[in-house]
Amino acid sequence: MVDLKGQYQKIKQEVDAAVLEVLESAAFINGPAVSRFQASLESYLGVKHVIPCANGTDALQIAMMALGLEPGDEVIVPSFTFLATAEVIALLRLTPVMVDVDADTFLMRPEIFERAITPRTKAVVPVHLFGQSCDMRPILGIAAEHKIAVIEDAAQSIGADYIFPDGSRKKTGAIGDIGCTSFFPSKNLGCYGDGGAMFTNDDELAAKMRVIANHGQAKRYYHERIGVNSRLDSIQAAILDIKLRHLDEYCDARRAVADAYDAAFADIEELETPVRAANSTHVFHQYTLRVTNGRRDELSDHLASLGVPAMIYYPVPLQQQEAFRHFVPAGLELPIADRLCTEVISLPIHTEMDAATLDTIINAVRSF
Ligand SMILES: *Cc1c(COP(=O)(O)O)cnc(C)c1O
Image: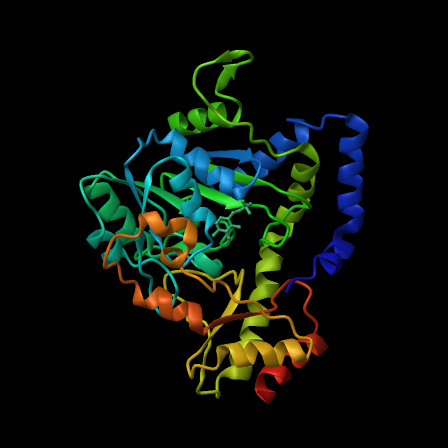
């Protein structure tokens, strides 16, 4: 699905030198590489504070802890997402409220979010799934009206811009109260292990998140609240600082692959190529087709038999997950998420795709 080896080969010299520098310095935790990467990412995103942490799931958890949510508070999430988005809500004894998504973009729809609001709603998590932005302006408007915090899950969308109606742009993750991302190796900005970060323009929230990520201590050995231990280590930060310089070209490379797939499948009636939202750029964390004739699993088997990797993101919506059984109210119906889980299939997409590989994949799909 990705070619992390090929990508590393191209930046090997830069990366090896940066890793060696950390090894020589022995500043493995909170070393200068971490503050350098933090500053680089703040400037790339145009956001006041980047708080690095250990992974994307921790980022979501720390964000929710910093917002001071209380057990029983409701947090609205799309049901078609990676489970981590909702897992931390349950872990903190908050109540996940699952909503349906848009059939074309796979994203949370502002009016569906609005309908799910109750007096207990305290936060919403728009997930910029597969690499394009949710429609943030109406989401921000509705959230402000109801005093609901907006936590963006930007784990798949780093580098994507949301385009406001007046044409101005902001990077996904830098729009809501807090943005969260993951540096898992296969993410668009991935490190060589685990990593994550929170983003915010709010000084107070930033200070709280730093304290929470560091055992609840602002001053060493003086713990003002219960926190967690969640750090990005210096080696990963050094690698990320180099990869960040290449992020825009990586996004372009992914878009070029998506364009080629779009053109190759345009005439196939039973395949819906990804719909590109007018108010977002797309960084194609995934290139996800919809197979509309009920034969998705057969296509998947056909590709596997030809040695072409393809993945189903995601086969099960949140409301059908065993772990979420207790959070599904009687009569909950999320038909679009249910249907998408039977229709979607993601093809390999990455920064090192060559013409021959692309042809092989396209021919494999077309032969079916
Ligand atoms: C990857 C991902 C996460 C979790 O990130 P980890 O670093 O794996 O903990 C959360 N949400 C979404 C949408 C993701 O894709």
